[in-house]
Image: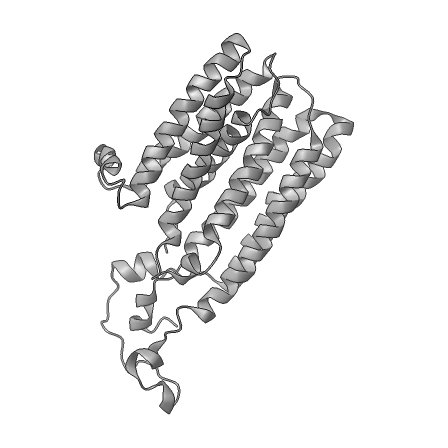
Length: 303
């Protein structure tokens, strides 16, 4: 699939912001000082900014409001409704927390649950598509949730550092370790998804596979079309390897090193750690979309 920049920004930033909403709603972050303001502002800013970026790929952004009308059957509509509910609930929770220093725990827990559900709904927009094996046959929801959890935890720690509060390296290290494990699992599964696919290829589709390898004698047409441009996007192996390496190093190894150094050199290191993590996740998210190939690509002899 041709990676749209607006979708990459949307999924990464909204996941980061909703991850911060999740952890803050569960009680992370100081109850006094400027750190709580930083956490609330960044969480709402990242989530709302990411949500706004999602309209960038629409042909008619002025009709984005219609996404809220199909919540019974559409994961995209459910995501939009849950996003508004999560940010609205967290806004009430943040008001009491930042203005009065009081945490209304039931409201915070509801906001955390809604944030988690929103990230899951975002992932299911892609995971439900059985016609794209790299999304449906890989742990897409688990990966989105893991990235949001780790990024949100790092965001809370970076915002706390900006507000002058102490940084807890243990929580960040645990999140990074878990996310790195999930990321490796996902990448391994994704690499084999194209081979496993849905069990179909040109041979099984035509019934001629038992006679030998089947290939097209001529292409269906001589020109390009929307499917070839958008849903059969090709990524060179070398480029894919480079992006995976960037994602692993910038997304996990560099933040891990900076987190280890933060207790010794200062909590300010959590800010570049968060920036590096976001850059690495964006590289992996670009691959997530670029390597997604629609099964109709068989018709054009793409495999």
